[in-house]
Amino acid sequence: MKLEKSRAGYIIALDKSRAGYWLVFERSRTGWDAYPPDLPGCGATGRTLAVTKRRMEWALTAHIRGTRQDRLPVSAPGPANTSNQPECHTAKW
Image (cartoon, rainbow, N blue to C red; front, side, top):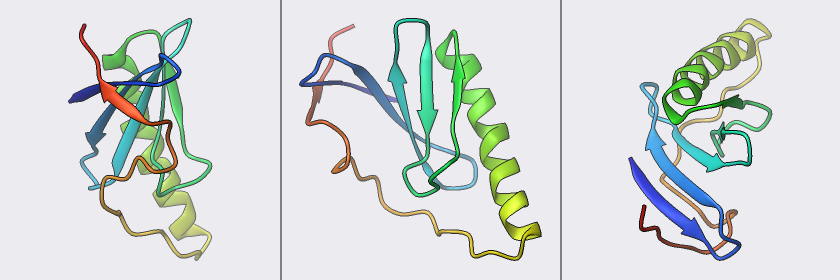
């Protein structure tokens, strides 16, 4: 997992899900937040990065399954893109 630090000072990480979607993990005051930029409305939180990643995989699966059950189109996984994120720099942890 690649950790980066935004200009605003937030630690973020990019990782690829089992389904092929890029996931963004952001450090918060109480733990971590995660979301796939290609699937608006899908997200997860957790106290640790490992818990957040596990919850995000579950949320991603549930989101895709629910979208298909509603017979709506599911966005295809796109390339890693942080253009909608603050400018990132390598973080030293």
